[in-house]
Each structure stands twice: as C-alpha cells, then as structure tokens.
Image (tube, rainbow, N blue to C red; front, top):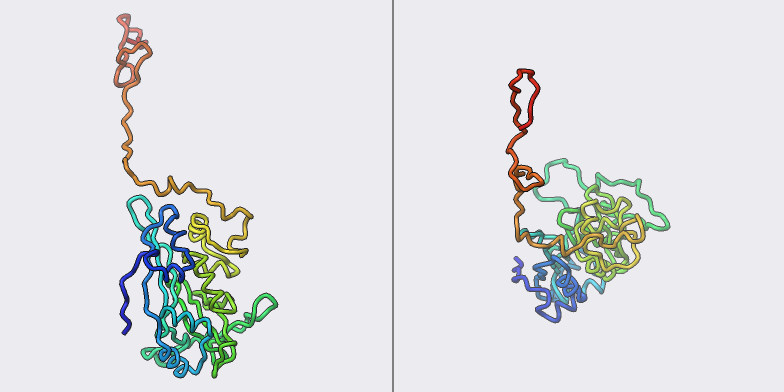
Length: 294
C-alpha cells in the first residue's frame, strides 16, 4: 500500500517548482487563490517500471518512464476564497505506476453476463484527417488510466496496436462520461504541458471535444485564463478569455452586513413633523360631508 506524504505548499521545494513549470507562482499571485498544494511523492524505482511492463506486456514511452523516475505520480490542488467560504477548484493528477491500470479489465465483483466495455463498442466514430482512429475497448487497443479527472471522464494512455504493445504506438486520449473518445496528444510530454497550462481547471479536457466546456466551467475559464496556446477553448469571440469581472470585488470579504432601513415618515419642507399616516379627515360643521384637510 502506498503512503501519501503530507501536502506541501507550492514553492517549498525547488524540484517541485521545476516539476510544475513555475505555475505555482502564477496561481499564488492570482486573486482569490489560496492553498496551492502539491503532494511530494518519491521517485519510482526502476524495478517497479520493469515489473509493470512485464506484467502488462507493454513498453512504457520514454517520457513517461522519465516522469515516473522523477516522481511516482503527481497531484496538485488549489482553492479559491469567495467571501468567507473556501472552494476546491483546481486539480491536476497523474496516477502512480501501481495505479496505472488497464481500463477494460473486468471487476472481480461484476455480475454474471454483465455487459463489458467491449460490448459497448461504438464503431460510428470513424477516423478522419483531423482525428486519428479512435481507441477500441476490445483487444485491438490496450488502454490504461492516467487521470480519473475527478469523475468528469478519464484521460488514458492508449496503445493502438494491441499486445505486445510498443512505446511508439501510444497516444493520449480523453474518454468522456458518455464513453466517446477525444484525441488529446501524441505524447505524454505534450499532454503534461496541457495539464499544467490549463491550471487543472474543472472539465478543461472538454475544451478538446466538439461540445466544449460547460457554462459553469466557462466562468472559471474567464476568471483564470489558462496559459495555453491557440486552441478553440471558447469558440465565441476573439476576446472571450478577457476577464470581464473585477476580482477585487468578487473576492472581497464581507466586512459589513447591510440591513435594510425602515421607511420613516415623510418630512415636510418646513421641517415640521408630519403625520405618521395618511392625512386625517373630518366632516364640516355644515354637515355637507366634504372632507376638510387639517
């Protein structure tokens, strides 16, 4: 069983600063951001990588091997403070080598004759010039989970040719909650850059789908502009990433609670006190019934 070391503040160790490409300093200087933490994990040992490759009959890509030899997994989180409340927002994660498990392995507790992922195979998603051939849940592809994406989908390391799987046959794909595949990058290094530059914002992987991110996630994107190059994250207008909100007002603490005042009586122009209610009336002595204002 893996031990989870205590979380560290983002800038506590130089190697963590290097691992996060300096993004911790950017987050810590952003309005409202608090508790930028990284779990400092020990490097994986070479025999752990060799054991994984033999057990799964797959060769890990060199860049992913180098990553595990630097840190056995990665987790970085950050929160935002809204008034008196602290909300978890950003999350970046890469599974450790022991949790890099095959996606379509059936559970020991699955029901008899229960459908598998291979039974849900959808061949309507064809390859095109802009989109390579999608992964398959059957033996044509070998799929490993890199990041569970906080339940919003799964980022996967995909071997396109089946077993025995070679390192040059790998790609990084995003599997959404409807079990549709979306291509992300050719290499782990390119994916890691995307992960860091998108700051771990909620649902950022959906920016690479045809339907895009949700309206709620778009608000956070507008507030904390991802450090990303030309991608179609928001296909609306060229200045769609311009922060139209004033962070100094959004994250201002509630020092004073405003209590609505009761409306008092209307003061006459002469400064004399007027009646509290509507003007009273009385009948004239002549008995005509016409109201006379006092």
